[in-house]
Amino acid sequence: MEEKRFIRRTAKKFGPAMPFKCLRCKNDVFMNLVRIRKWFVILIYPIPFYSKYFLVCNTCGWRVRLTNRGQIEAAKQLNLLTLSFNKGEITKEDYLGKIQAMHPEQFLPAHPDPELTKLAA
Ligand SMILES: [Zn+2]
Image 1 (cartoon, rainbow, N blue to C red):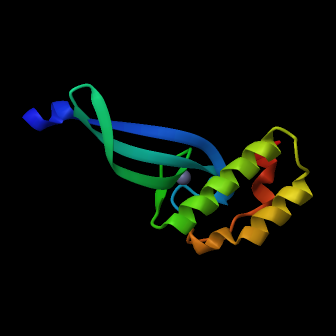
Image 2 (cartoon, rainbow, N blue to C red; image 1 turned 135 degrees about the horizontal axis):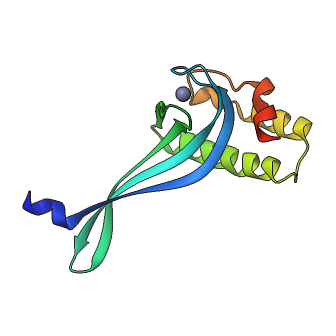
């Protein structure tokens, strides 16, 4: 396992991206946007060679991988939108309207649940 010393793994948590009923634990949750990255460390310089994005249930850890640039960008926009809503910068109507306009079902196997925005209150 000599090579392990030269590989590092990092997980960046962007925070909540979308209200959702988890397909595994059935809880009403926010799916969190997470990026997993692996790095080669050459001398002291880390060089990323692997980067994958997921939406992750914050209750049970169920996750769905985002497999293309369009999905990742949409999830990042949802994340910014949700953080903005959580801070009270936009109204619930605005938030729901914007989520629905983005059609997040294109990258998740289910629709966002409008009833779940109470989680953000
Ligand atoms: Zn879950």
